[in-house]
Image (cartoon, rainbow, N blue to C red):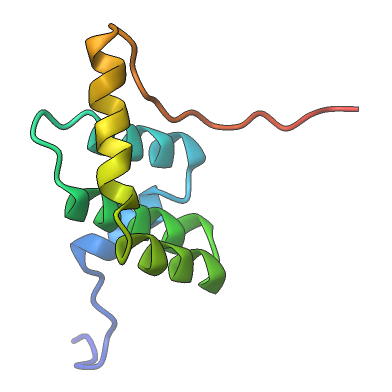
Length: 99
């Protein structure tokens, strides 16, 4: 019988684990940016998940600060404008330079 205090992983725990893969994180954020009906709160939630997976405390604070500004709405406005020009705002994994 398992201990009553056994740690139970939530859906969010599994999501954050999967976002530790930069390719998964990039696809996750790109999907949030491609929403037909942009929701700044959704973008903030996704940024928070990626910050938890790949970043540190400073990154999580950045997301909180970003959320208290109008910047998230501006990102969606940029995406809509680019779409009107038949362009797309996307996120990809930065390749490390090899020497």
